[in-house]
Amino acid sequence: MRGITIGQYFPGNSLLHKMDPRIKIVLTLAFVFLIFFCKNFWALGLMAGFLLVGMLISGVPFKMLIKSLRAILVIVCITAVLNLFYVTDGNMLFPGTVIKITDKGLYTAIFMTVRIACLIIGSSLMTFTTTPTMLTDAIERLLSPLKIFKIQVHTLAMMMTLALRFIPTLIEEIDKIMNAQKARGADLEGGNLIDRAKALVPILVPLFVSSFRRAYELAFAMECRCYTGGNNRTRMKQMKITYLDVLFIIAMSGIIAGVILFNLFFVHLI
Image (cartoon, rainbow, N blue to C red):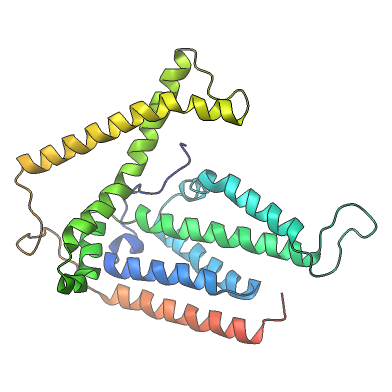
């Protein structure tokens, strides 16, 4: 649980920290879409290289970014194994043996692993370099056209950001509850799957109680400070698109063009 880093913010003064959060969200969504659009390692390698440049200029330690993969390590391993053994196209790597692994299956397993890793690190990079307040304002601005349909955009953006922000807090709370239960003699790791599921009950109940208590305290604190959202709310920091944002947009446009070209002309070179 300690390996989950989504929702955390790493203070810094890098180029990614200085970017307009609206542009950062749009570019992150474009990055996620392009990851799924990649059809070969050439295109995926281009996206991975772009992500590596972002990691270098972000100022966020590599250890923290790689740590974000620990939470989905089991999912990555299961995905890789399924693709490794269930893809039967291609040439057998170990002919004459019981191991039925093809070169196509190995390629697909590695391809899916790299794709998932890029998705998680790319998403974590945005939250590491954007404060929750700026993230809320950016989401509200991007969703502002929905006001035509009488949707409370500010409330929706606040809910999304608070949910994202409280993920590290809830993970820390789970860790405390588990340590407290272990100190009382609870066995949370032994037994079969059913026994482990039953052992989660003493963890989930206090976790729900703590979550509702935190939500009530937060709502009470906002009410005491006369917090109101909407059109009449002013912002201490105004968001402006600068030459830096334009530069990143141009870079992403080049990446999009590169991925399209690799998908068209290098489809057979995998």
